[in-house]
Image (cartoon, rainbow, N blue to C red; front, top):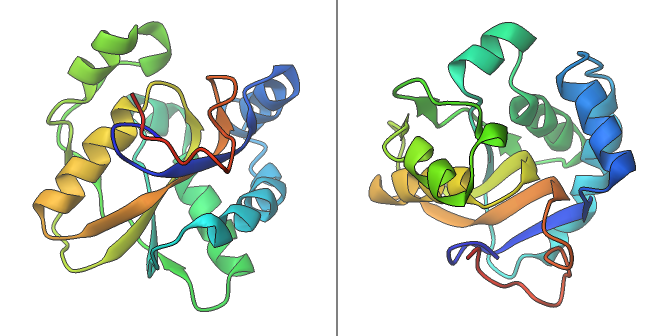
Length: 176
């Protein structure tokens, strides 16, 4: 859990997960998304509250331009294919450019994400989707923006979790 957002990850961010995510994101091997989505699908049943839509966390503009895609969006697309009746939508967009989070510390990540997203949608019960959770700053900003627009964010799923022992299904603890 991060900042009162219930969430689950498929695995810790160990060497194999790092290699898989790097191939997916940096080398453009987007076919890996179907494997990752199949693993994420298992986590959908872990939430007590119902949700009706998957929402990808937006990439920063430079990363999306360089890659040609938003990894979270590709994961949402594949996850919805595996989950009949569950749709996804890009409800969030970047309101300004952000720095690469991987080069920042915890406080720097929070400051970098502050006021970095906008939404024009309301009245949805949302599950956020991203590839990796580190400090939770991006997920926290996404939740705040969505809830300020009268949406309900049920939680998040990610493929990998950088903090060991955070992905335990029995903990459902907030991101701190």
